[in-house]
Length: 79
Figure 1 (cartoon, helix red, strand yellow):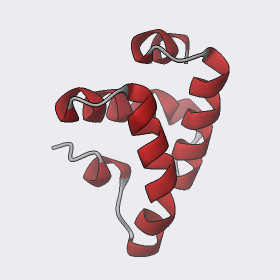
Figure 2 (tube, rainbow, N blue to C red):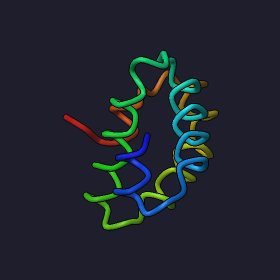
Figure 3 (spheres, rainbow, N blue to C red):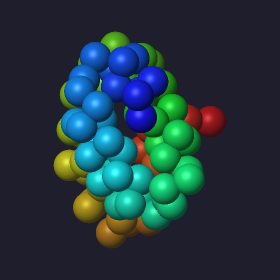
Figure 4 (cartoon, helix red, strand yellow):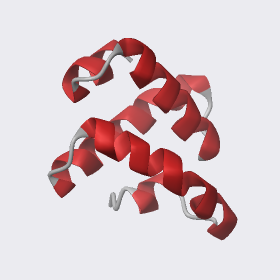
């Protein structure tokens, strides 16, 4: 979480809350949150968006993603 916060330029509390919210919404366990952080950071880099903006986007879209069975990797357009 600290690396994610530093990389994303956000506070540790905000990074932790976002990782928990996003990770939980996509069915990840706490020990898998580094995968969530990597996906969000990579998506932000590819889209030329900020990590903070991408965190907010994933948090907002997670409800729709759950309803349609979209995985985090699909939502992040990872291959």
